[in-house]
Length: 138
Image 1 (tube, rainbow, N blue to C red):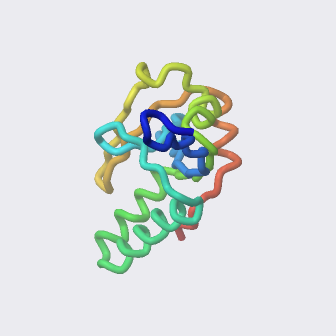
Image 2 (image 1 turned 60 degrees about the horizontal axis):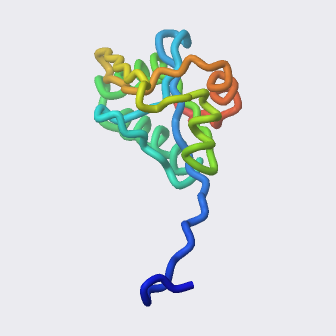
């Protein structure tokens, strides 16, 4: 089809992407990982998301004693799980987020580093965390 002489492109089909859910506070709280600016980092594959954590963990261990201890503490305090969605709307529905404009961004910090995320309270999100792929941090 043409519109004013220019070809009209069909909207791009949604493609799968992976995000990270993180349990905090001894597993009492669950967040969708964000940057400090509130943006959700999306990974092109589950493998890329898992490698993000595993590679960082290995890099910190290679730096020396203090970095190694920080990596261990980070792995104890923040429990990541990688989940994959077909679209943004599927992600919001799957996580039980009804109005993303009212999402609460929380920040947790410790001597080993911090984590920002959108607080998730839905039982759906907890089930997704359980089903997600866990990075090997040992």
